[in-house]
Image (cartoon, rainbow, N blue to C red):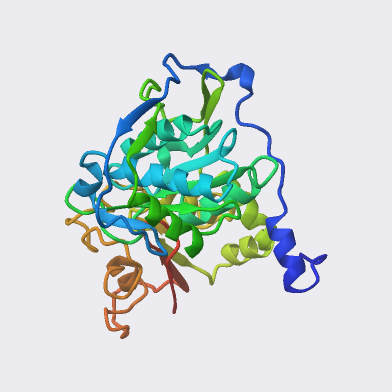
Length: 349
């Protein structure tokens, strides 16, 4: 950081690729039985497949019906080809925020990706990657800027579950959201799509453990979802000074992941790496329904005064932001994240 001169120097330092050792060598890869034969599925346009800046969001059951997801994913590939993106032989990131139907959607996307010529797919274990982590993976994993883009299965802070919401968005080769020029192309293709390419013979991949899987000349790598994001943060922030702050007897904190994807990142980084007090990270186990109706936030993983009930109360506040007596010491610092961890709230005592 001391070597960085101004904002541009800091930007270059934080985005400079760092070559990481591979979690598995190709010699250790597991060969899958199956087929890469490409099936052409007849389809027709589905009304309303118009992604916004945060992607396409609908009720989960809508995505599960027929070829709804398939149509959109193929339309994205059609748009990428039209824009000259190097899809064939390229690397694609596919993961999500852990909401209901994420694992099934990821398997579908992998099959469509291979049929469209993708050579390698990167997935976080259990199909988990926060939206910021997807950006970090695209920009820094391996030699850096290897993927041509990535699909994120997320509806952000919207509740998850079979009766709730699902979503998908596409990030480009720079790690950022697809620009309007590209999303406009996607919409054009959703209105004219007539066929879907899919390798139906590709078996579902075990996303539960790190590993490398091959089928023919195609590769699927499942990796720790935290490592790339952590490595990037360590290059952007002074972890030594933060760790010293955490060690002070007059400092305490609470971090609420609201049962979203941020839990593994919070516990690993804030408690394990930086030495925060165990248990400071609450609701840190990702759940398909983000806690569901029985949770204090009713499965609505949106970090604000209304929904982040447990965090707000722990910080000695009510839903109006007024101080209340909780009968417990109030932490010095409090923060929370939404379902896919790209929306945050920070509170101080």
